[in-house]
Image 1 (cartoon, rainbow, N blue to C red):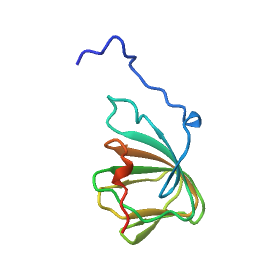
Image 2: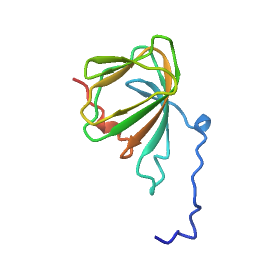
Image 3: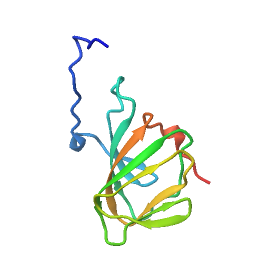
Image 4: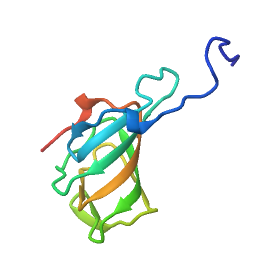
Amino acid sequence: MTPNPTTKGYELVDFSMIPGVPCPCGTARRGLADVEDYPGTIHVTEISTDAKVHYHKTLTETYFFLECGEDAQMELDSQRIAVHSGMCIMIRPGTRHRALGKMKILNIVYPKFDPEDEWFD
């Protein structure tokens, strides 16, 4: 593939400049959503203590835990797993999930995040 000479070879994202939007987990800042040749999105998400159980039919999410409270957990298909900074969980489509406790995560989403693909029981 020949690079397009009018396109630079990288994208820079300053998450402090992206407005946060409400999501089932808390507040997300979504990067690279408008970059056509990037197949996913990257989110920095502040998890609230009352995250809602939800799932996605097409999206795969990978949570990398940046900051976690001592009691931080993930609920995955009704199973609770303790998590801490430096851990990572890949969540396949169809997996009911939510975060428990306060935390800040980097969420790598493939394909690009679609708010229409958030489902609740």
